[in-house]
Length: 115
Length: 115
Image (cartoon, rainbow over all chains, first blue to last red; front, side):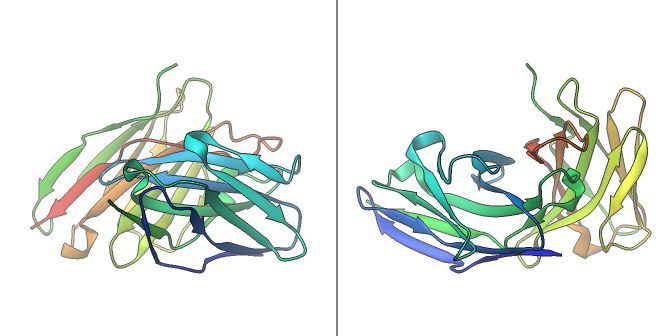
Protein backbone atom coordinates (compact mmCIF):
# COMPACT_ATOMS: atom_id res chain seq x y z
CA UNK A 1 0.00 0.00 0.00
CA UNK A 2 1.13 3.54 -0.59
CA UNK A 3 -0.08 7.05 0.24
CA UNK A 4 0.96 10.65 -0.24
CA UNK A 5 0.34 13.64 2.03
CA UNK A 6 0.96 17.16 0.88
CA UNK A 7 1.19 19.03 4.13
CA UNK A 8 0.03 22.43 2.86
CA UNK A 9 -2.99 23.01 0.66
CA UNK A 10 -1.94 26.63 0.02
CA UNK A 11 1.47 28.32 0.12
CA UNK A 12 2.00 32.02 -0.49
CA UNK A 13 5.41 33.59 -1.08
CA UNK A 14 6.76 36.87 -2.38
CA UNK A 15 8.58 37.00 -5.69
CA UNK A 16 12.28 36.39 -5.18
CA UNK A 17 11.89 34.47 -1.91
CA UNK A 18 12.39 30.71 -1.45
CA UNK A 19 9.66 28.15 -2.08
CA UNK A 20 9.08 25.03 0.02
CA UNK A 21 6.28 22.62 -0.79
CA UNK A 22 6.13 19.65 1.54
CA UNK A 23 5.32 16.05 0.69
CA UNK A 24 5.39 12.96 2.89
CA UNK A 25 4.80 9.49 1.54
CA UNK A 26 4.37 5.96 2.71
CA UNK A 27 5.16 2.94 0.62
CA UNK A 28 5.65 -0.71 1.39
CA UNK A 29 8.42 -0.99 -1.16
CA UNK A 30 10.94 1.24 -2.89
CA UNK A 31 9.02 4.10 -4.43
CA UNK A 32 9.40 6.32 -7.43
CA UNK A 33 8.42 9.86 -6.55
CA UNK A 34 7.39 12.70 -8.80
CA UNK A 35 6.41 16.34 -8.64
CA UNK A 36 4.04 17.69 -11.26
CA UNK A 37 2.89 21.26 -11.87
CA UNK A 38 -0.46 22.31 -13.28
CA UNK A 39 -1.24 25.77 -14.56
CA UNK A 40 -4.92 26.82 -14.80
CA UNK A 41 -6.92 24.77 -17.30
CA UNK A 42 -3.83 22.87 -18.39
CA UNK A 43 -2.63 19.31 -18.00
CA UNK A 44 0.04 18.26 -15.53
CA UNK A 45 3.68 18.76 -16.45
CA UNK A 46 6.52 16.78 -14.89
CA UNK A 47 8.86 18.93 -12.79
CA UNK A 48 11.19 16.22 -11.55
CA UNK A 49 11.38 12.56 -10.55
CA UNK A 50 13.22 10.34 -8.12
CA UNK A 51 13.77 6.74 -9.16
CA UNK A 52 16.36 5.41 -6.67
CA UNK A 53 19.38 7.19 -8.11
CA UNK A 54 20.71 10.43 -6.53
CA UNK A 55 18.66 11.57 -3.56
CA UNK A 56 18.85 15.24 -4.58
CA UNK A 57 16.94 15.62 -7.79
CA UNK A 58 17.06 18.68 -10.01
CA UNK A 59 14.13 19.51 -12.23
CA UNK A 60 12.98 22.13 -14.66
CA UNK A 61 12.62 25.86 -13.94
CA UNK A 62 15.06 25.79 -11.01
CA UNK A 63 13.10 23.37 -8.85
CA UNK A 64 14.72 20.57 -6.90
CA UNK A 65 13.65 17.97 -4.35
CA UNK A 66 15.45 15.79 -1.86
CA UNK A 67 14.42 12.22 -1.13
CA UNK A 68 14.82 11.51 2.59
CA UNK A 69 14.06 7.89 3.33
CA UNK A 70 14.43 8.28 7.11
CA UNK A 71 11.82 11.05 7.11
CA UNK A 72 9.73 9.56 4.27
CA UNK A 73 9.72 12.99 2.69
CA UNK A 74 10.18 14.43 -0.78
CA UNK A 75 9.90 18.19 -0.35
CA UNK A 76 10.05 20.50 -3.36
CA UNK A 77 12.16 23.66 -3.17
CA UNK A 78 13.21 26.59 -5.28
CA UNK A 79 15.64 29.29 -4.13
CA UNK A 80 13.81 32.23 -5.68
CA UNK A 81 10.14 32.30 -6.69
CA UNK A 82 9.02 33.81 -9.97
CA UNK A 83 5.54 35.04 -10.79
CA UNK A 84 5.23 32.29 -13.41
CA UNK A 85 5.61 29.65 -10.67
CA UNK A 86 2.08 30.36 -9.45
CA UNK A 87 0.26 27.09 -10.08
CA UNK A 88 -0.89 23.89 -8.40
CA UNK A 89 1.72 21.29 -7.52
CA UNK A 90 1.15 17.57 -7.07
CA UNK A 91 3.36 15.01 -5.37
CA UNK A 92 2.97 11.49 -6.76
CA UNK A 93 4.24 8.12 -5.54
CA UNK A 94 4.38 4.80 -7.32
CA UNK A 95 6.14 1.59 -6.43
CA UNK A 96 9.07 0.96 -8.73
CA UNK A 97 8.35 -1.52 -11.49
CA UNK A 98 4.62 -1.40 -11.11
CA UNK A 99 2.34 0.01 -13.72
CA UNK A 100 1.27 3.62 -13.98
CA UNK A 101 -2.28 2.83 -12.92
CA UNK A 102 -0.97 2.33 -9.40
CA UNK A 103 0.16 5.96 -9.06
CA UNK A 104 -1.05 7.76 -5.95
CA UNK A 105 -1.52 11.53 -6.15
CA UNK A 106 -1.41 14.00 -3.29
CA UNK A 107 -4.24 16.48 -2.91
CA UNK A 108 -2.16 19.29 -4.38
CA UNK A 109 -0.63 22.51 -3.09
CA UNK A 110 -1.64 25.83 -4.60
CA UNK A 111 1.33 28.19 -4.81
CA UNK A 112 0.62 31.91 -4.90
CA UNK A 113 3.44 34.32 -5.73
CA UNK A 114 2.98 37.93 -4.66
CA UNK A 115 4.77 40.74 -6.50
CA UNK B 1 7.62 14.04 -30.79
CA UNK B 2 3.93 14.86 -30.46
CA UNK B 3 2.50 14.96 -26.95
CA UNK B 4 -0.71 13.52 -25.60
CA UNK B 5 -3.70 14.87 -27.50
CA UNK B 6 -7.17 15.10 -26.03
CA UNK B 7 -10.31 16.00 -27.92
CA UNK B 8 -12.52 17.88 -27.59
CA UNK B 9 -10.96 20.49 -25.32
CA UNK B 10 -14.27 21.96 -24.22
CA UNK B 11 -17.81 20.68 -24.38
CA UNK B 12 -21.20 21.41 -22.88
CA UNK B 13 -23.86 18.76 -22.36
CA UNK B 14 -27.17 18.54 -20.54
CA UNK B 15 -28.18 16.10 -17.82
CA UNK B 16 -29.06 12.67 -19.10
CA UNK B 17 -26.94 12.91 -22.23
CA UNK B 18 -23.84 10.89 -22.84
CA UNK B 19 -20.36 11.99 -23.86
CA UNK B 20 -17.28 10.42 -25.43
CA UNK B 21 -13.80 11.82 -24.93
CA UNK B 22 -10.76 10.83 -26.93
CA UNK B 23 -7.09 10.55 -26.06
CA UNK B 24 -4.16 9.89 -28.39
CA UNK B 25 -1.04 8.90 -26.44
CA UNK B 26 2.56 9.61 -27.25
CA UNK B 27 3.83 7.33 -30.00
CA UNK B 28 5.16 4.11 -28.50
CA UNK B 29 3.23 4.43 -25.25
CA UNK B 30 0.91 1.53 -24.56
CA UNK B 31 -0.67 2.66 -21.30
CA UNK B 32 -3.41 5.27 -21.09
CA UNK B 33 -4.86 6.43 -17.79
CA UNK B 34 -7.87 8.67 -17.21
CA UNK B 35 -8.44 11.07 -14.34
CA UNK B 36 -11.28 13.31 -13.24
CA UNK B 37 -10.36 16.62 -11.66
CA UNK B 38 -12.84 18.78 -9.75
CA UNK B 39 -12.34 21.59 -7.23
CA UNK B 40 -14.02 19.57 -4.48
CA UNK B 41 -12.57 16.10 -5.03
CA UNK B 42 -9.22 16.93 -6.56
CA UNK B 43 -7.57 14.51 -8.97
CA UNK B 44 -9.24 11.10 -9.01
CA UNK B 45 -8.15 8.03 -10.95
CA UNK B 46 -10.79 6.58 -13.26
CA UNK B 47 -9.10 3.68 -15.04
CA UNK B 48 -6.03 2.58 -16.94
CA UNK B 49 -5.79 0.69 -20.19
CA UNK B 50 -2.79 -1.26 -21.41
CA UNK B 51 -2.71 -3.17 -24.70
CA UNK B 52 -6.48 -2.81 -25.15
CA UNK B 53 -7.25 -4.23 -21.70
CA UNK B 54 -8.42 -2.41 -18.63
CA UNK B 55 -5.63 -3.01 -16.14
CA UNK B 56 -6.67 -0.83 -13.21
CA UNK B 57 -9.93 0.77 -12.17
CA UNK B 58 -10.79 3.53 -9.74
CA UNK B 59 -13.92 3.92 -7.67
CA UNK B 60 -16.40 5.34 -10.16
CA UNK B 61 -19.89 4.09 -11.08
CA UNK B 62 -20.53 1.97 -14.16
CA UNK B 63 -21.69 5.07 -16.07
CA UNK B 64 -18.00 5.73 -16.63
CA UNK B 65 -16.43 3.38 -19.13
CA UNK B 66 -13.51 3.30 -21.50
CA UNK B 67 -11.75 1.38 -24.15
CA UNK B 68 -8.45 1.27 -25.94
CA UNK B 69 -7.81 0.54 -29.57
CA UNK B 70 -4.99 -1.41 -31.19
CA UNK B 71 -3.12 1.84 -31.95
CA UNK B 72 -3.26 2.68 -28.19
CA UNK B 73 -5.72 5.53 -28.67
CA UNK B 74 -8.30 5.52 -25.92
CA UNK B 75 -11.82 6.78 -25.43
CA UNK B 76 -13.83 7.24 -22.29
CA UNK B 77 -17.60 7.45 -22.20
CA UNK B 78 -19.90 8.84 -19.56
CA UNK B 79 -23.56 7.93 -19.89
CA UNK B 80 -26.59 9.52 -18.25
CA UNK B 81 -24.68 12.65 -17.34
CA UNK B 82 -25.20 14.28 -13.96
CA UNK B 83 -24.38 17.80 -12.85
CA UNK B 84 -21.59 16.41 -10.69
CA UNK B 85 -19.82 15.03 -13.75
CA UNK B 86 -18.75 18.55 -14.67
CA UNK B 87 -14.98 18.38 -14.47
CA UNK B 88 -11.67 18.49 -16.26
CA UNK B 89 -10.96 15.01 -17.60
CA UNK B 90 -7.26 14.32 -17.98
CA UNK B 91 -5.61 11.59 -19.95
CA UNK B 92 -2.05 10.44 -19.31
CA UNK B 93 0.12 8.03 -21.26
CA UNK B 94 3.19 6.03 -20.32
CA UNK B 95 5.24 3.16 -21.66
CA UNK B 96 3.31 0.94 -19.31
CA UNK B 97 5.62 -2.02 -19.13
CA UNK B 98 6.81 -3.52 -15.86
CA UNK B 99 10.27 -1.96 -16.07
CA UNK B 100 9.08 1.60 -16.55
CA UNK B 101 9.61 4.34 -13.98
CA UNK B 102 5.93 5.19 -13.83
CA UNK B 103 6.31 8.65 -15.35
CA UNK B 104 3.03 9.91 -16.74
CA UNK B 105 2.68 12.31 -19.66
CA UNK B 106 -0.52 14.32 -19.51
CA UNK B 107 -2.73 15.89 -22.13
CA UNK B 108 -4.28 19.31 -21.63
CA UNK B 109 -7.62 17.82 -20.69
CA UNK B 110 -11.23 17.95 -21.81
CA UNK B 111 -13.36 20.43 -19.88
CA UNK B 112 -16.90 19.02 -19.56
CA UNK B 113 -19.73 21.21 -18.35
CA UNK B 114 -23.07 19.55 -17.60
CA UNK B 115 -26.11 21.86 -17.47
